[in-house]
Amino acid sequence: MKTWTQQEIASEVARTSGVAGDTVNKVLSVLLGALTEGLKAGKEVIWRDFGKISVTGKQGGQAQIPGADGGQALSAKGGVNASDLDKVCAAVVEVVAGKVMRHDRVTFSSHFSAALVDRKAQLVPAEATGHQGMRTIAVTKRKIELTPQPELLNALAGQNIGFEAEGKLKEQLEHARANKILLACKDPNDFFIKTIEYHFSKAGWIVEVVSTFDQAKQYLIEDPISLIIVDCVMPDADKVVEYAKTHKKTSLVPIMELLPAGREKDWFKTFRFLGNNQLNQPFEVKDMLTLGERELERSTEEQAVFEQEVYFRFPTEDRWIDRANEIAARLFADSGLNEGQQVQMCTAFRESCSNAAQHGNRHRKDRFIDVEYYLDPKRLTVVVTDQGKGFDWRLYIEPEQGAVDRVRERRQAGKLGGLGIMLMTKCVDKVEYNDVGNRITITKFKEDRSKSNISGPQVPAFQRR
Image (tube, rainbow, N blue to C red; front, top):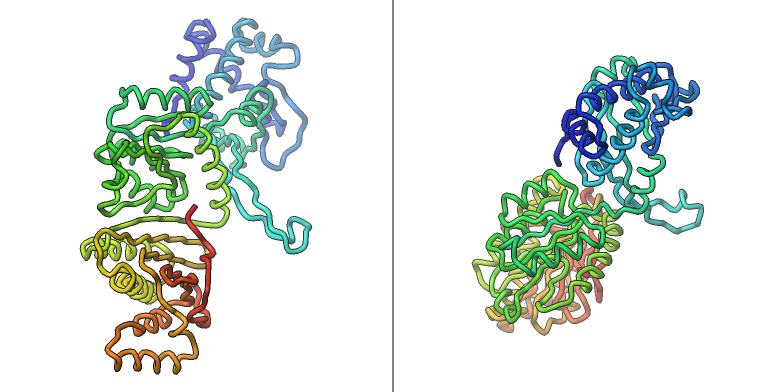
């Protein structure tokens, strides 16, 4: 996120309005001075095509900028030409709106800073909807937030200011997409990349193109990214996806991965963090646009429920199983579980991966293990899926003594299995299987709850889409 200073804004206003730079600075001082004067008097200041600015909790009439008379009185008071004042006033709104809609910050020294902020999607409880048993989702909304600078704050005796967009700025907020895409690629000048950038920009998206992990990381840290597109021929492609998915701030940002033609099978021969969609080339850019829209809708819904989602896939090899355990331990450490709960979750996860490799995939390196990780305010859920035929998990269902007897019988018959499932039920709050038995869902609540042990058949409450 770039911060634009008052001087930088003034220079751009001079270029767009045709008014001399010195005059622009003088007019800006007049306009900002009128704003401060109105706020100190407790008035709601209406800045034409920009918005209503007021001191929180005060209602002392209204003041207009440049004024109901077209700025005649204000220009006379400030000693500036009325025509110049009108041009500068309009250009300031245009320039500031352009910056903040790109998620940049604009600062007027001694007065205020302006920035675009998002109110994330959230669940509205049933009692607030007025409908019994019905929850709704309040979708993501954008607004401009004004923050008073120290000098203005002192002039207002420490009181904050409120802002409500009006006129042209309000229209931009309502109709402009203002969603920013991070396009990570090997060569920003590649014709294919330029084509994608062109079509998304034409559709109203803001596209930031990067070619290294460090560049991508900086955007992910500083900017509110709405969609990530990763061209998988980029050397740092895996690092970009891993960073985005393993950090809570960006974990729910949809990722579209572009796979080179004929490389689909080879691509999964190693450990991979997965985006939300993989597109095999060749494909139509219009299909990408449609998919991007759909992913935004989906992510808006999931932001209201989840804090983090991570997906990864790996071949059935010891080195990748070890890496999966390391990644899981990192995620659990950042989940809100206490140290003891983390150890329990690590134990259950390790056992589920071991079972998937040994009993499900039979240690075949051409078979994969898929892991899905979901974190919400109350619980942590992990789904592990193998490519085996499954098993009859019902042999190990409650009551516990019956499960112990069955494990003992299998051991005496020279068969393996069973003890790991019992161990998992001791470590987590819920262990669930699908009907076939090749997918296990383990759940740990952040607060202690009574065990519900094994259940099934079960389609996980959270499934990767």
